[in-house]
Length: 273
Image 1 (cartoon, one colour):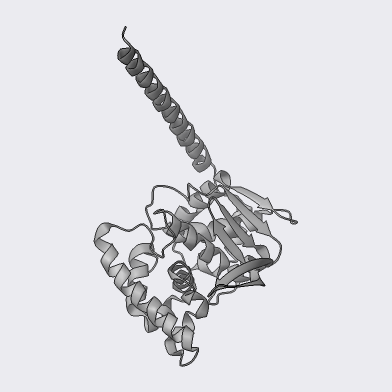
Image 2 (cartoon, rainbow, N blue to C red):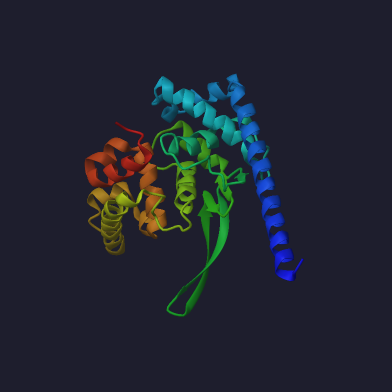
């Protein structure tokens, strides 16, 4: 047996071994998923969901679908409380809003890259260093949530307030919009889309982001852009997360003032007929 033949045998052996591991892992995941879906959703979860206005907007078929998604989410993610005990209410509130965004979206999984949800009791105070023209400044700012790598950070005080009272903001929706944005490999304000839809999406969202940025820079004559707010002008990724919040929380207002923007968001999320 010459050297190259032996090397080929080794490579093929390694390849087959890795394939076997992958198939075994896929089988394990499939069986785990089947086991999760075989159990009914807990009554405690349903009672919590009934208190959420966005849940009560769903029809019966959508409720059945999201129940399954919630079970998968809760049983495949690790919830970690920081100076707070994790409760069923926390898990249900976070899982519902995360799964609502993907209720009619086919992306091949339930935030599969996400492993951990860190829950803090209150809004976090964090330090930031920024540079402008070579001048570095330090400051503190309030953080209701954060999405980074395989972890989402949530302030429970803010998440709970947003869940039970409809208004413009929703911290869980905002952070999971970032998670969806990350799915195509970059946080650029564009979620995974069919190639045929990229141009229309980019044209509409770029136009509205640029207009918002102009208004925010002048900080006057906000007009309809007051609905989106200045934070959406931070960058394209934050703009996508903020307008996703408005799409979820204030769909009628968004459709009235930004019909093209609403159309593009609805072509992705598909939550409204």
